Length: 433
Image (cartoon, rainbow, N blue to C red; front, side, top):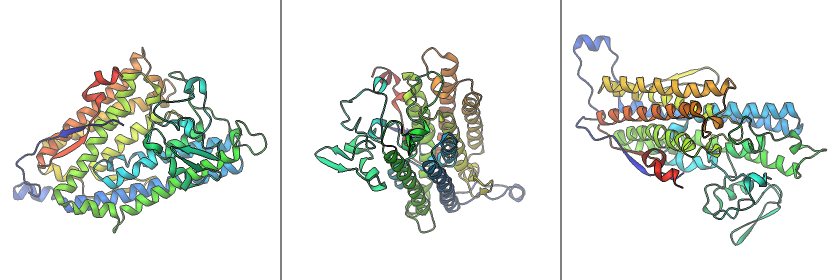
């Protein structure tokens, strides 16, 4: 993604650790605001819990993938696809931990990079995809079909497809579109290309692409090996990030080591960057500007409406210090919301109100897609005024949410820089590309 930095909020003459003064009667009725260290500790605890939940869901996906590979048929393929969608729910709620936490952002590429040039991985429809791309020599490398793949001056041995082999191609030759690992590589292997443009329908890869007797499109054994290696690697990566947020984990230590102001700024950086540059800009506004279904986040499965929705749910999880895991257990503790409320009750109310609107607007996108009326890629189509409006209303709500967060940044006397997006900040540059 082509980001630029965007100044987020202004420094205000408010002590970060000062507690609002209440009358003794008021104090007796109102719980004391949490301390900044308590907020940072609970934030790290939530990260550990949420990534752990994502890892557990990915392990269930692995079980479904292994069952599918062992007996590839329509039913086991459908079960693996369902498990993939379920695994996305807890993961998307973790995305607010990105950006401010360098350890997370450096790691994230192996897990959730998009969009991808899928010809790197497997066969493609050359009529729609083409056969070459000037800036990507690996555009149609097709790891699955080839036991050796040239990467620059070197030949990479792909005769046995393993986790280590897949990692060699991630952002291969410095190109971000060379995505060989993570959720979206697995998604492509389960659904195949979505060749419907902005018409109805998702990818429709047949189960026989993994057939041991009646194999379609060749290399079914290697395709199965790739799918299993990618899924195993996803589980490994999520377990790694879970450990990074454990009591002695490197991400937790890095956060606490920034001090109170630095730690709180990190939280706001993650929330602001996801709300503004990433979700509102790169994942939503850009697709409408270009009317391009390739700009939908979960483009093979038509699951984008859910990914956007749970991104917003995750923003609110982190803001409120509350997470409901996939087993239904609620984890709650000291929150940025409650710390900020002691400094600016009006500012926090504005954030709460803006978050409600954002969830409602993105929830309407989800409801429309879930109903079968219109998938997310159809909403992006030129001339689809209703669909475009659904997405742009969501964008506007996310921008308003970010503006509300700015007031809290000022009230806490923080200086925060979040990711911007040309789609929001300079749309004419995007539309002219």
